[in-house]
Length: 321
Image 1 (cartoon, rainbow, N blue to C red):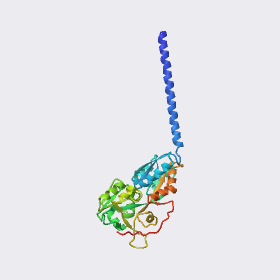
Image 2: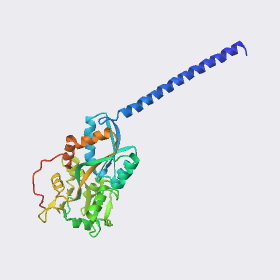
Image 3: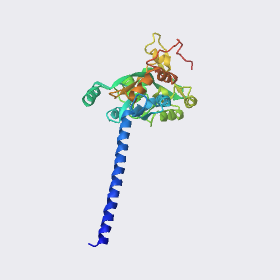
Image 4: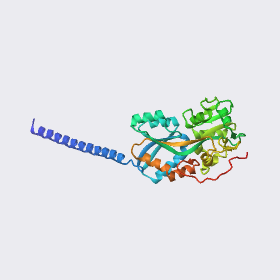
């Protein structure tokens, strides 16, 4: 090897070392950034900051959207990502690590409690946030807007062939509730049809003068919301037989008052189920909904808050037709 060849090899070796040093420096910077990001995410999960995924029963979507909107406006560093879906899908999501909270119409049962105790070594926290209702809606031109429970049963089991529109298939909380409380284990008749969510039920009934629909109260009961106020030009809320009233022939519309006093028979709870071992953003959002501001949001949506007393006045619940 000549002197000039030796110089060339030496230059190449020096250049390779430079590139190696640069590459190692870049790798070091990337690893530090990743470590810092991981530390930030872990440390950032507090009751007012961080990011969580929750699954929500679709029938509660309007009121929960308001809860999230107000909570995140108060705590800008909090990011709650909600997916709205049938109740059974929410419980499936709760078994996944990515979903920390669900908002549904029932609590976890004994079998589910055993599963979480085995998987997590603790039981998820749960409690009632508010009381909702399954509302029976009819077309604004419908001749029938007063129903006994027996009449509803005859519609749902198919003895009365009037079309009944649900917010989905047998996976929704509304379907489950009606099977449990009205059908008592009977199967739906062929006249019961499924739509794609609660809003689709409202739209269908607005076009069908001889049908009944079943939706959650927060979709149709808030007259302070312009969209829901306009809907009442196309549909109306039916009155249902009051089975707990001392007087016979009393029928009630779903409202905070009739739900609170047990006059409306299709009332149901809204539960949170929280899978969080230490106090993080899920706990913060739960606390918000159970405290005054969150309870007022439920009240404004015309649900009955479970954690805050309401000042109510007795009023007649009969309605002239």
